[in-house]
Length: 251
Image (cartoon, rainbow, N blue to C red):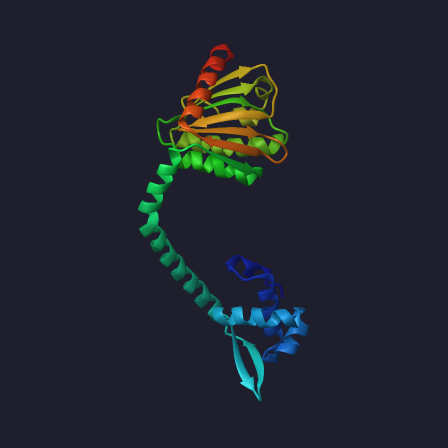
């Protein structure tokens, strides 16, 4: 019996081991439970307490000795229902705080900040922010767009986000490195009217993305690195540089 899928509902590896051991043994003491689950006795106490709080197991005391039993499997559904109720409550809390948080965030947005993001998940965060902040008719600008060190993964990543950017009606002008011209999978999504594309004879893993008041310096290494500068002045300066390159770039 393998209950590893229960991790998807929030149970830890140790909780699954203990729960599975109880299903196999039925009612038992902490000592027997530790032996069957292969969880150290020092951890059994904390794990059984968490499972008791979740309502997944039960506990009785006989002659001063604690005995544990698995609760009926329907209590797993009850546990999920309680989690859903907690999520709804948390959503209401965030919704009530949202106006204040947005006001503070927008105030911070007027200040110059520098952030660092690492890996493909970090790059994903940057592009999710772009999609959240830009709407139909907004423009963003890219120069130095490259194949990247992980070319296949870069193709998949930029194909996905470029399609989403176009679907939102965001307009993008991009200056690619010349060697990207032959990357058919990558280039297939950069079509008008959402995209206007040109090329320069250069080769670098570093590109610059400009949207709103943000400038992102993106290094497409094996593990991407992104430095994001929030500054109207910096964005305007990089935009001037983009405009100069755009004039000499080729279609």
